[in-house]
Image (tube, rainbow, N blue to C red; front, side, top):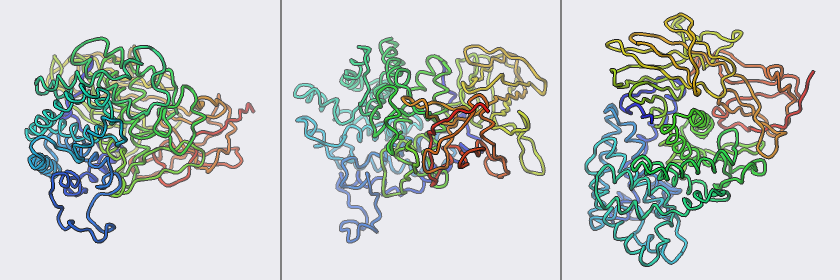
Length: 606
């Protein structure tokens, strides 16, 4: 089993991913603490400053949308905020954010005391009673899960004792509620979008060792989705995607805690249902209107409500569980594609705001959220997603070091044989105080030309394992300390075994444009370069005449200087010999442009 490098020992270096993380961090800091707490204050009977009477709601200093006091899901966002802020504060170098976080946690403790000492909700306790007779109520367990998750992360990552004390008192409330409904209406435990509860109670069981959390785990582990997975049938079609994916996280955590193979089998069965047997859009998504698309029927679901972002975030978490257990590169390949075509593509590159869905219909446009007026569920998962990169790159089994994702970063990894400091970056050289890519493949410049540096205080023997991406088009080129070397490729990894001390390893993974057919309509395809889905800047499916064996005859790269994240424009193309011609750009770069992902292909063999 692989373990992540310690979060406090990983730093993302300047570049595309650092920029997106910085946008996200600025947003976390920008949001007003009183507004973040507004629904907890109201539930505890605390009057918001100047808001006893609101003469003009449009100017009131409050969060609206799904955070408005009239919304039954109000308060969900703060839990995501806490988790994201805690992740960023690991390592102690974010004093302003840490002070803001500690203040919010202390205010939650105050609210809990005013509520009687146990309940710490942004919603009334009676919402849980409303689930028992089957009356409609919008997801009270989903809302409470976010608060529990956020406080758990604050304790787990930062050691904040107030956070775990709040949870300890809240757990007493939950134990009594579970005892009641298991007698009167057992199905209520699995109502209100409770899917994330199993994982968070399991986490708290391990963190505290307290029996009350074990009892809560037992109450939540009987999810009917597990029964359907055990039967081996299609357990997901037309099911609510984001209500089902967190169930797999609970199975994953219980396998890690108990070692019981049934939980691993359930996790693998979920993946088989969700990905292997279902197929997916080129972006990794497989949902429309928040529901799972039937197997291989994606062509029927090209709409404006494809790819809810929460599903992308949660499927990456599922894949990461499986990757750590198995080291299987197919999970890392999936994560890489989801990062570029979900984490990045659904975050506005200028403002950091999310889009709820990523439309796949021809002539689509992304709809971006506002800073304080929407707060869809995807706001929460987006602020967490942009803190996740450091935990996806560097892994170890104690003996060797594995590189799963190619994101400029540095890390310190402790092996049985000693401590190792590593970094990876796009391979550049200085030129008049600017940076230039080394050139490969006929003068093309590439983001996949990478340099790894290894530094140790003393010579340390280990194998550096580099994932060979599924999209790699040919043999990787490798040099060690300036000299070309051959490396073994096994199970999808380049293996470089040596005694390391002060070394530089250069690796180039060649990539090429390919066309990936749409499930259910193979005459339509998405253009993909490496893991990056390209969007045609056209308002309809205008088709593309292409020689599938030589797509370079149809697509001409655009590589002007930009002096930006990359000094040459990356993954941008324009067509040739088409009527009309158009540009293709990374889907993650599309902001307000109209775009089309899937084009009808007309094959030509001129």
